[in-house]
Amino acid sequence: MGALSALRSWLGDVFAGRPGWMNAMMLFCAYMAFVYVPWDFFAKPAAHDAEVWFGIMLTGGWAKLTEPLHWLVYAAGAYGFRRMRGWMWPWASLYTVQIALGMWVWSGIYASSGAVSGWILGLIPGLLFLVPSVALWRARPLFQERPTLRQRYAGWALVTGASAGLGAEFARQLARDGVPCVLTARREDRLRDLAEELERDHGVETRVVAADLAQPDGADTVANAVADLDVAILVNNAGFGYQGRFDKQETARLRDMVTLNCATPVVLTSRLMGRMKERGSGAVVITGSVSGRQPLPLHAVYGATKAFDQLFGEALANELRADGIDVLVLEPGSTQSEFQHVSGALPHHGVPADPVVADALDALGWQASVISGWWNWIRANTAMRLLPRGVAAHLGRSIMASQTPEDMR
Ligand SMILES: NC(=O)c1ccc[n+]([C@@H]2O[C@H](COP(=O)([O-])OP(=O)(O)OC[C@H]3O[C@@H](n4cnc5c(N)ncnc54)[C@H](OP(=O)(O)O)[C@@H]3O)[C@@H](O)[C@H]2O)c1
Image (spheres, rainbow, N blue to C red):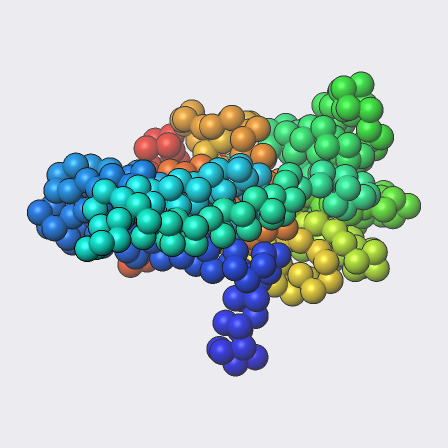
């Protein structure tokens, strides 16, 4: 596939699911948010600045002051159209009504020309801007909430690493949406408690499969244990970290980590994907990490396993989209769970697991990977993308050093 057809197929994905006029509005919002308003704010001298709000023109410093608000409106518009957010309706429609009204008021106050009153002239742009308002109003069904996960995928979910942290939270949120869950990890007592909770609170069926997924046959054992079920959602979440200098780490534990974090998602996905292809729908989630975005001294192998997960998942998303299978890599930052304790890190801040999982389930079907948390997103998309990898490695090391016990540094 040439670069041009690759670009065309990517654009096809970006513009799918919206009428052409709405795509044009999305592009306009993106242009305003990422090109025009930043230029206006940073490059235009305040003396030449003018902003119109509800038809009233602000100039100079007052105009500058209100520009971030305009930026917010356009950024929200670009994002809201891109993800077809429920809150876009009725706000987008009302906002364009406000523009129509503003046009009329602006003409009335500032644009009288000779014999013709500005209030009359202003009716023309005012009425023109009512056209998108009406179109957005009529398009409201497109913005309504998406069907539940149960309605979208209609089958069982298999969640690995369900005995703690993010995995337990995945199971809870899937069950809340009515999805029956297979729970797997090593600690069977925990899985049974969670299964009881899900059945009691959400009335879903559950199955517990205790298995060690760091063993070479672990993934096959689990795949065999669900062979009679219609697994539509696979959450490859089990994983652990191992913090410290490579030459101080145990070989066996490193091998287990590579097997669990890399080989297990590959084998489970390979074993369960056939059924999803047959039914023409399915979902595969892989828990990666923002750690996989740069070389990470003092967590070197863990970071590399998460880079593997990310590249594997994003490539798979591209391969399987034509088969109706949604693939998503979740990239959490530091999250409250047993992860820090298990990896031997010094305790440090983490966000609760529920919003992280909510971000993943929300992004599923829309994009190939999602970074949870705006600060993580900014770091991953600025410093970690722009810095030379050598500098990123030094930066990563200094952060890891502050979280690594002295005897492992
Ligand atoms: N927490 C964070 O800060 C963070 C950040 C980025 C990415 N992540 C990723 O998020 C995923 C979930 O981690 P978490 O934060 O929820 O950690 P967690 O609380 O330690 O949970 C890890 C889960 O994996 C299971 N597991 C570990 N070894 C296993 C094995 N050999 N066989 C089967 N299951 C095994 C554990 O169950 P058993 O011990 O019962 O087997 C547990 O259910 C991991 O892939 C991790 O890399 C976490």
